[in-house]
Image (spheres, protein in one colour):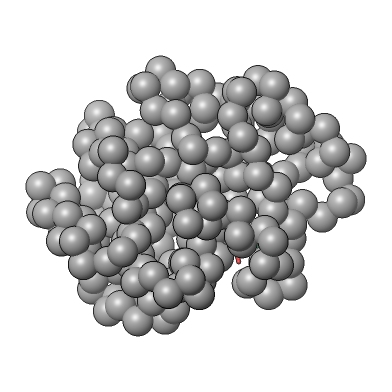
Length: 219
Ligand SMILES: Nc1ncnc2c1ncn2[C@@H]1O[C@H](COP(=O)(O)OP(=O)(O)OP(=O)(O)O)[C@@H](O)[C@H]1O
Ligand SMILES: [Mg+2]
């Protein structure tokens, strides 16, 4: 398994993969590492890929390098292929990934949506993690509804022989009453380490929380 890279995957879209990628990249850069970011496929790209733009503005990469494949519609990659009638090569994508793996001290790979989101027919982000030999981090929501989503995502990953390095529960606000017991119950269900990240005003987490993300990937 590549020790120099991780797939940031999630229970759903909009749960904080880019947010976690940003905070991890920021913290590793602070430690003096050369950090690369790769969103292999970004959809819902009208003009500029938003996730790629945010991360590449931090890492100094070109958008072409950070987001090699793009689709316009807000869909899964596979649905993008079908609707926009444009395919791409998984072999070329892997070659691009391997080049970036060589180029940087640490590479952050961001999925699109949740872990079972299809990239191609019979090929989703769990397949990509296996295929690219990537460690994974499972990002989940903090509040009500997260137990079911997180359990199902973890259970599916387990069925694929993938064990995330941790589950990151993101967006704790201290308002939703379920936030208190969710981490404990998810920990009990999965036996995985659960990291709690708070909701912040801007993009950057407090240092002690960012530090935990860096530790998870070995720095
Ligand atoms: N802990 C947090 N504190 C404040 N804002 C957050 C936090 N986590 C996520 N956000 C914000 O919530 C929105 C959705 O998060 P994000 O873009 O990271 O989701 P995602 O999982 O990357 O979604 P996608 O599947 O589209 O890539 C963004 O505007 C992000 O900045
Ligand atoms: Mg994102």
